[in-house]
Image (cartoon, rainbow, N blue to C red; front, top):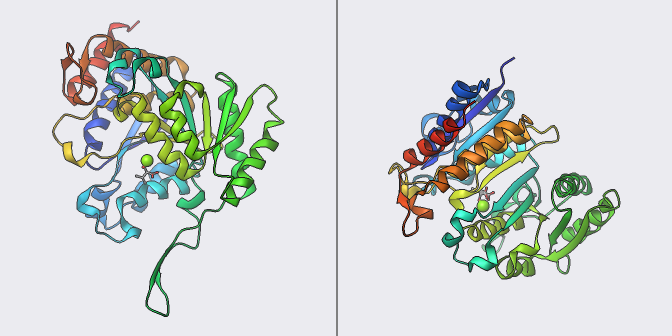
Length: 362
Ligand code: IPM
Ligand code: MG
């Protein structure tokens, strides 16, 4: 049976960047015989506007039935005053949790062509290649109790709960060790075990699981130090594994090391390798609809989709090489532009990647 990708463009720049990834997919179908169906659905603010909920039933069941999900971005100022339960971001959290996508892989790779785009000195970031493994369905994002309530004395309190079961830590630990085994076999676990008991347990479980991976060198780092080390000497890291919220923060930090958050893809996987793939950046409402956004993170996310869900390394490598070739040709969207390069639009960047793919057909 033909494999199916659920395509959820979402809000803001989502539709523009997903359109370019679909151009790449079309080229793979036509010129490389990749068999793949797609089906679109609404998610986020546009789904709320059309159906009253950011994650309509039809979207969720499509995502569940499909072999993989490709998502653009959700959210925007238009929906910021809505109740939490129907904010666009809830759709993302709902998909992650309903599909059990507990392992979030966020690679931060500096393309040599973009060494000048980083705000850090080239010698600090050149050759950078980090993989952040973020726990995605637990921790403070989902812990209960949560909410804002009013005490008897009339004062309001806001509560969120940082909670991890041993089994949740164990499965993300295994995902991280397996990832490290495919790379340089160095794993740094990031926690706040000096203050937070839940992450003291995290550290213990990581240490226990490490016994099953004698070839991987495990180290531990407090999150405040990890944030500092990421900007001081990021190349010391190979794979980092951390909690949901720390991973959210550290992955934005790592993204900036690479010059632009517009370059970074992500994969969110369940136990069986089914996944949702999305750029790590948001919906960028300020530039939405202007054909300015960088589609490369979404195109690279499509590459991760082939690699991690379909185990099709050939197609994944093709996509990665086409992105590199497009950068080699000197085209740059605004976020990665530098003197001497050719500034292009979202659509032109997609075309450049397709042209690079075609150039290697056969
Ligand atoms: C991310 C985003 C999301 C998160 C938001 C949009 C809910 O920042 O994927 O990193 O916090 O996980
Ligand atoms: Mg984030």
